[in-house]
Image 1 (cartoon, helix red, strand yellow):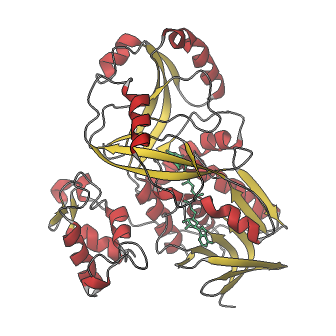
Image 2 (cartoon, rainbow, N blue to C red):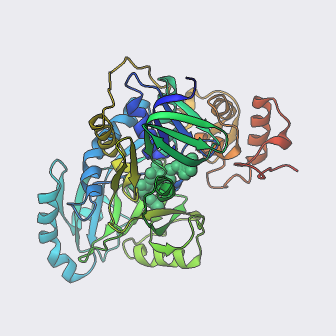
Image 3 (spheres, rainbow, N blue to C red):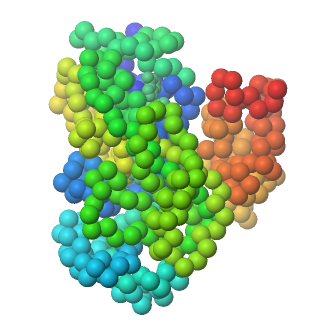
Amino acid sequence: MKNKYDVIIIGAGITGLMISYKLSHYNLRVLVIERNPEPGWGVSRGHAAVVHVVQLPFKSLKSKLARAGNKELLRICKELGVRHRITSTLILATKFYHFLALPFVYLYLKMNLKGFEVKLRGRRSLLREEPALSPKILGGIEVKGYAVVDSFDLIYGLYEFSRVNGVEFAFEEEVRSIEYNGTVKVITDKGEYESNYLINAAGLWADEIFKLTGGEMKFELGKGVMVVFDKAVSERLLAPLYLKADPKTKGGAIMFTHDGRGLWGPNLRLTHSKDDISADETDLEILLKKFSKLIRVDPGIPLKAYAGIRPIPPQNDFVLERSGDKIIHVLGTESPGFTASPALSELVIKMLTESGLRVEEKPVSKRRRFERARDDPKSARGRVICFCNLVTEDEIREAVRRGSKTLKGVFYRTGACMGTCQGSRCLADVLEIVADELKVNPRSIKFDGDGSWIVT
Ligand SMILES: Cc1cc2nc3c(=O)[nH]c(=O)nc-3n(C[C@H](O)[C@H](O)[C@H](O)COP(=O)(O)OP(=O)(O)OC[C@H]3O[C@@H](n4cnc5c(N)ncnc54)[C@H](O)[C@@H]3O)c2cc1C
């Protein structure tokens, strides 16, 4: 039967794509259904892309899976040619009683972070190695094993690897109902599919898919705002020491992106709408107040602020639920779901095999790396279109050839229009090239979906 699969995955965020990447190593017919035109436009669009180590409480599933997923995520980045930068986090004491507590916090971290290097750091060497640090820093703890990743390249890398190894994708299809009668029937706004197994990896909307199968879970919606600055101020991620852990967040940090922009946040504010990805002055004030005290330098020009929403379940942890023996729900993929995704996927596949899915390895093909001018400017070809992020015409055309039809997809794939000028210089050129590559009129090019034309 044409529309019959071994496994259907709902959602092409980092969770769904990591599961599809892993399943693409086996002889299985797999389909991913995603309502957006491209992968990674849900919560996985707006996070900090930090590969974490410290996640409290250490005994929670999310903490265990983050530690387990940490190294595998970096291995996958290397395999797929995804840009990333290895770093560490400095947990910094600015108050005298925090300074006195440092040895105890150090021992606690050391005991719980087996396999990761943890060091007590003195004030003088810290100030020497990180000149931007405030002279008020009294000392700190360095935790190694962190990294920052080009998360869009990882999303597209997992997608392209899955596709080249046989996984099918149904984009711009929304799952509307699910029927289960021995096999699973998934009904979308465009068609029907049958499958032996179904995985709900719908992230922020996983509660709604859970409900379609009779389940009930209410997420708290924890909005987190990130502020992007034109430059990074440090070589390491900088976090203030807290003695009383907030159960809902690690507390954020002064961070940076893989390509050297400053990134501060996230904060945590509860919201009532899954669409509320607004950021306002209060968010900016909270972040500046919280982190400015760690540094003595000007953080640079704030380029933009963006927000993402964490789906926080009552357990305040990742939850894996079954509906019958053929449907698995991945619920509560809040932070650090990006870091944990390889280990979380392993757990889901283990649950599938326990329910009878037979997996048989097959030879796989590699993902063709997306070469970037900014990685090797001397060998770059073609006209430079985005000067802020050094993106060439060739790269924009390549993004279209790899499947992007919208401007948002091209921006995410290439980094064009995402630099200091935020597209004010190059947007029109990008639009023209996309239209030319797709051989359509520029008027038909959309920003992201229906009703988002740029040229009218
Ligand atoms: C501000 C912020 C910062 C963060 N920073 C980090 C970090 O630095 N490191 C880290 O490890 N984690 C971080 N996280 C957590 C991380 O972003 C998430 O855990 C992760 O992105 C969740 O991915 P997901 O695939 O589960 O969900 P999503 O990315 O939301 O994917 C779900 C997909 O399902 C699709 N979908 C939903 N309903 C349907 C339907 N009915 N039919 C078809 N498709 C559907 C959606 O369109 C979406 O694409 C952060 C989170 C936030 C909010």
